[in-house]
Every structure is written in C-alpha cells, then in structure tokens.
Amino acid sequence: MSRHLLSRRRALATVIVTAAMGVTAACRDSSPTGIPGAPQERGHTHQGLPTHDELQAALLRARQTDNGGFDLDMWATVVDRSGVVVAVAFTGSGVGDQWQGSRVISAEKAYAANAFSLPALALSTANLYAAAQPGGTLFGLDGTNPADAAAANAGNSADWGTATDPMVGKRIGGIVVFGGGLALYAADGTLLGGLGVSGDASCADHNIAWKTRFFLELDNVRAGVSPAPAFDNIIYDLRGNPGDQVSPSGFGHPTCSDAATAIGQALPTDFPIGHTLQGP
Image (cartoon, rainbow, N blue to C red; front, top):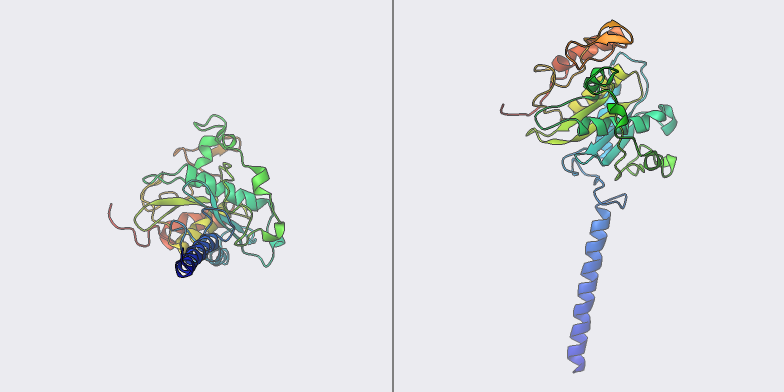
C-alpha cells in the first residue's frame, strides 16, 4: 500500500472517530443528569413538560397569591406519562425553607395524579379522598403503590429542588389521596404527565397546584368528575361528622379553612381551564 493511500485512510479514520465522539458528547449533554429521559434545559423540551426553571417560576408565581393556607414555601414535582420525575423545584431561598417531608410527597402526588388520570377523564388527588376512606370504593388505594424511599432520598441533599435533583430520571411512585396533585394536558388535550405540589395545608396545596398548572399552560382538561368548567377541581361536599362523612359525588375532600374553600371554588372562574384547547 502506498504511503499516500495509507495517509488518506488514517485521515478518514480520524474524521470518523472525531464525529462519533461529537455525537456521544451531544447525547450526553442533552441529558444534564446523565440519565436517559432527563429533561433538557430548554422550554418544554421533555415531551412538552416544563423545565426546572419553568416549574420554579410558575410555582413561585402561584405561591405568591392568596391560597387560604399558612403562606408557606412549597415544593413541586413534575412526572412524565410513565411516572418518571422530570423536574423538582421549591420556592424558598434554600432547601430548608419548606417542609422537607413535602419534597417526596410532591413527587407522590404527581405520580398519583398521572396514574389515575386519562386523556378523557382527569382526576386530581383531591378527587381521590372520599373513595379511599374506610367503606369507600377505593379504600386502601393509598397503600397500593408504595413510594421508593431509597430512590427518593438518594443523592446529595444540596441538590434537592435543583435541575439535578436526585429524583430526576427515577420513578418514585407513591399514592396520595388529598389535595395537591393534578394531571398535565397539552394544548391538544394530550395527557403529558402529572404535577404535585406540597408544603402547606392540603387545600392550599391544591389551590397552588391549580394556579401553577395554569401558569404553565398545561391545563387543557377535557373532562373530569365535576361538570365543566370545574372538571378536576377540588370538591367540598362531605357531609356528616368527622370519621362518618358521606360525599354525595363520591369525590369529596375535607375543608381546611373558609378562605381556602372560597379560593378553591373560584378557581375555574379566576384561573379557567384550557388556555388554547379547541374542539369538543
């Protein structure tokens, strides 16, 4: 083989190796946590779901409104349609400014809202309360999918609530049957995943979650257990004494405060479902 031909083959090999290294690096860079399926830090890149920064901005905006609770800082988690965490955020100035137990609860709420919603029927975690009580048709529901505590609490706590939160890329699981979890729907009504918010009274959690979803413009719900325009809003219809209450709708939730109840009932009017949803 001539020296000229050998030189050309070596040059071609170098080009191929360099290109391959570039593709590998690009693939690695597209997943900031190094986990396949982790969200990219560009607007709504992970199957239409929000990035960490988008989630944090919407959550903070919602938390700064009156929600009828204790005015506490909050956690929020978003999962994709398969239940894998894609973003975790908080509103305080540091990780210790909100209830630390609420980080995992927010992930469980997101998982539950996604797991028990469908393209044509949204169920908030608030809607699951009555049926999951003793004597209810879904009694024991909250024990059916235990959270993966090891996965939820792995990693460095300094990364909690950041773009590299250790829960990102993992399926945490867990079922919560009180307010704060909502399904996320794209403009065409496609079910994308779930949002979970935790850190205050459960009724305030629901109010903040509803507003966060509204600000993310992922609230294009087609139907729920309440008539339009409420759909998957919290329902306050429990009657009777505590421990012996009945929900006429079957999807009722306890009240937390008069203020939270009034705010919750006004959500479909003040923050209406469906920014861009078209069709039936």
